[in-house]
Structures are given as structure tokens and as C-alpha cells.
View 1 (cartoon, rainbow, N blue to C red):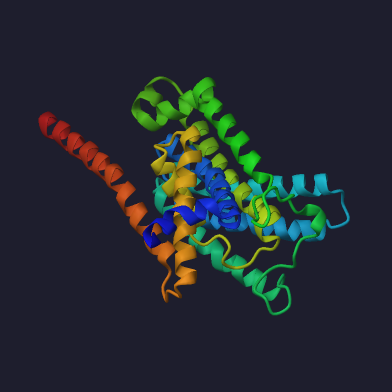
View 2: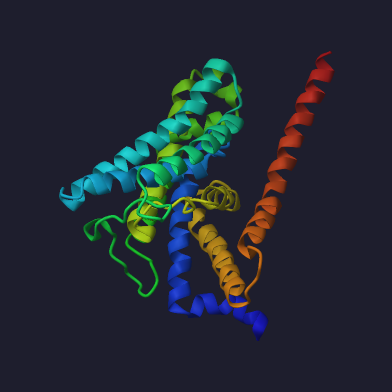
Amino acid sequence: MENLSFFLTTLTTPYYLGSMLNTATLFVIASLGAIFCTKSGELNLGGEGQIYLGGFITAILLNAFSTLPAFFAILFSFLASMFFSGFLTLLSAILKKSKNTSFLLTSFIISAAIIPIIDGFIANRFNEGTLLATPFINERFRFPIIFPPSSLNISFFIAIVLMILIYLFFSKTKFGSQIEVYGISPEFAIYSGLNITKISFVSAFMSGALHGLTGAIAICGTYYTCHTSFAVGLGWNALSVAMIASNNPILTFPAAIFLAWILTSAERISMFNNANYDISSLIQAIILFIISIPFIANALKKKNKKSDVKAKII
């Protein structure tokens, strides 16, 4: 029965069930950002920094616009968060285009560089007393909770709408199909006359923008302040969800619930058993390792095929 409780208690206790769904909500939105890059053949490893930047900008702007109507203040803050996080990712695409650098590497490096900068701003300019966090946002800007006592809020429905819209974008629009074609075969896309620069730049920007939106929603729906560790692991978990879902936007929802269920259960067990190490991080690392094996195998197959072709030509 003790073993079964690991699986069942999270689903049968309102607080843990709501917390699981709230975590899954953030996973869905961020994983949609990861999918935008993987659909175009790139891998965005800077999700954590982009989410952190989006949350930080939202917290700062909502505190600055405390007298504005809630709708306009939230809208402007969210758009600003999406723009700056999107631009952060766009830098990697620009560097690849102009300097032929690795998108994967630069996205990770830029993210790793922005995190301590934001930490410094929070610690020295925007902190709330002795806490390493920005001041709490006004209650007018906080999303209504729909499943107390958990923090599950209306962003749950926002995630579902975004998931459907992005699925329709890739399956029903011409530009969405072009992104997928470029991701599958860049050479074919080039010879077909597709604007690969536009595809690369838009995909990168949208990936960062959705990560920034994740951070903004986390501030308004869950944390109500930007503290220095709120985005830790979120970007990597989102990447895991995208891989589990095989880059299918519709499948991000069940994949996010599955991962959130495991992590929430692990955190609950860790808390009640006074574990002296982070079980959820260990499980996260194991899951990411397992689901990355097929991707590594496919990459090695492609590399071997290219080597065989070159050998035949020679």
C-alpha cells in the first residue's frame, strides 16, 4: 500500500492534484516554445533563462504599473516579456546566420549569462526586504484560483488554448508547414526556394516568446513575485515534455501531466520522508536521459549515412 500511495495520493488529494495540474500548465506552455525550435531543426537549451527573464520583466512592470487597469497592465507586461525573451533567443539565430555558430550552444550560453545578471538586479535593486525576490504584485494582477487550496488558476485554460492554436498553426498553415519542411530537410527547403532566414528567425523568436510567456504566467498565477529560483529546472522539464510528446503540440498536455505527476509525487515523498537530497531532480535527470536516447541514436544514424555517402563519392 505504501508503494501505491506514491502513485495515488497525488491524484486523490485536492492540494496535490491541483499543484500537479498547475505545474503541468507551465510545462505545456514552455514545451510549446521548445517545439517551435525543434520543428525547425534546432534545439533551444536556453529555456530556463528565457523563462526567468519573462518572469522578472513581468514582476517589475506590474509593480511599476500598479495604478493602471489590470487588463492593460497585464497585457503590456506579457507582451514585453514575450518580446525580450524572444529577442534573447533570436540572438542565437542571428549568430548562426552571421557567424555560423551552433544555435544549441549559443542558446545555452546566453541563458547561462542572463541568469546571474537577473539575480544581481533582484539582489541589489529590486529586492523585497531581506528576500531575494521582487516585491509582490498587486492582488488585482493575480490570476483567479479555480481549484483551492492548490494554486491552480485560469492559466490552465490559457495553456489549452495555446496548445490547440499552435497545433493548428503547424497542421493548417502554409508557414507552419514550411517550418516543418525546413526542420526535416534544410537542403530541400533551400532548393524549394523557401525563405530559410525568415523561418529560422521566426521559429527562434516564437520559442523564446513562449518561454517568456511561461515566466509571466508563473508570476501572475503561482508565485506573485520573481524570486531567484522560481525558473530552476522549468526549461529542462519543458524540453523533456516536448521530447516525450514527439514534438506534437496536442500530446504536450498528457506528457506534461505525466511528468508533473511524477515530480509532484517525488517532492511529496521527499518532504514527508525528510530526504536529504532532491528526489525530483534525480528523477528529472533520469527521464531526460532516457528520452534523449532515441534522439542521439537518430543523430548518429544520420551522421553515419552522410559518411557513407561521402565515402561513395570519393
